[in-house]
Image (tube, rainbow, N blue to C red):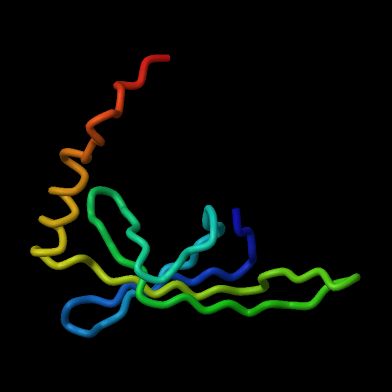
Length: 98
């Protein structure tokens, strides 16, 4: 988990306007083109910016981060839904049994 005092998520709307939200943490390291769900709405990470600070003995920490996301278009949402609906199985793959 990335825990910093300043994580800003910027949602880029279809009309070009931006909405900013302050986050207290982010699980993992967000990557460009990663899918993110907020509620039931899928978004894609467009850009990620970090402010990295040098610590003692060569350690580094993230002091601030900016995450830019945009909502998926209708065609993109349909493509994601198709991929998630029926995962492709190999011909020799066995069903999982705990």
